[in-house]
Length: 129
Figure (cartoon, rainbow, N blue to C red):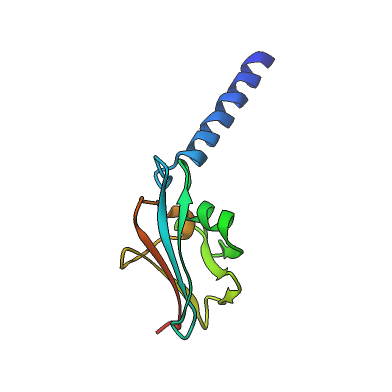
């Protein structure tokens, strides 16, 4: 009986870890992406190419390479909100960080955005309409 419980727990942990590492939003290979960050005056403060690894998503890449602050206060179905990157702060009420991939607005949080080799990810502080 105890063996079945232990095996069930081990299998459950394995399933959870494999989903976390290889979610549909995780990169299936290595590559590099361009990161462009603009402040509230649209001045480019970061423009560089960053390497990513198999299993990464945008959150993991940003967390490994930059100082960021995130929030999941609106739930996790869309992913984390990016509130700050390298000292460029927002509060998501008066200002927010708009994210686009290859010029197309993202409609998910940073942990639900997959990485594609050669793509450009832009982050710009904006005021809600």
